[in-house]
Length: 121
Image (cartoon, rainbow, N blue to C red; front, side):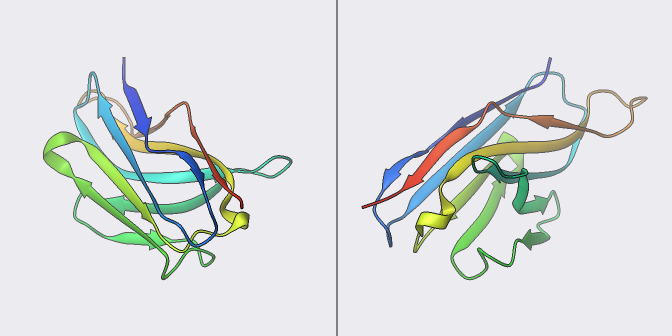
């Protein structure tokens, strides 16, 4: 019953910028963290960045200094500002939420459907 809706992907030139958004909705008791992962063809899905409800952030070394993750806890929404994009950033980007649907449930991961980011001239 939890749904993650992503938006903001697209085609940009090297050096350009994109801003991804993801809103979680449905039966949510509490959210521990939200973040972004990406997967390129033939590659394993990897963490890009995540952020806890308290605001603690974590970034992949390949995006530090270029990407910024932020959140609006009241809206259960996470954002990823991507600057100075490189062709190596091309991938499907997936939103992730670590949450409980009830007090009795253990924390589990939920995933969005993914949004394509292509960096090319």
